[in-house]
Image 1 (cartoon, rainbow, N blue to C red):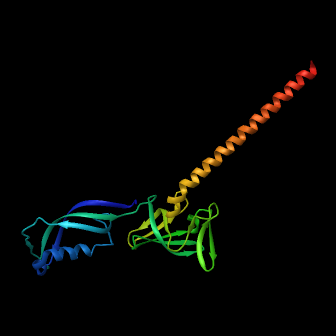
Image 2 (image 1 turned 120 degrees about the vertical axis):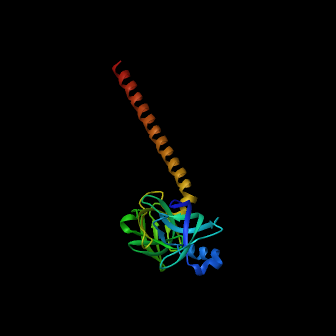
Image 3 (image 1 turned 30 degrees about the horizontal axis):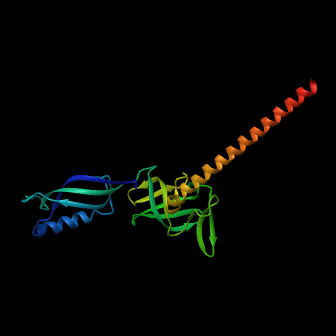
Length: 221
């Protein structure tokens, strides 16, 4: 999925002297406090990490709040969606004019009606809401559906996105993966049949023209 990247980083963590007895736990606590928040230094939301320290000795830095620094080598999994990237998320709420999605369980996305292509009709059947394609009834978006959408914008402070379902390669992931190729085959088959019919019609028209021409010449002779 787009929007994810793995970054190698060298970090310096500043810890309180009271945590010197268990540095590993202090490092874990410090890095864990950064999870699922946008970090300008990392240029993304930290989703996971692995870190190691080569420092055997750490010097205490003097000041009003004494601390000691620990150098780390870390591998970071970051999330930073950009406009036009393709993401996938689970639908948690539907409305007549909007679709609400959760991505990776922490980031939300909203797709409003102007960004939902016209083939999708909002329907309520037996109390169950859905956006159903008028071109293929098997293509439905319901609560619990995993959808593929295009990012329009991302608010780094509240981790919220606005998305779009206007491009044809967006919609219900299950349907897109299972039936899109099948529909393409059907579409190509229909095109071939249409071309064959046009070709047959053209040949018939040409044959009729030849017959009329022969009849015209024979009548003059």
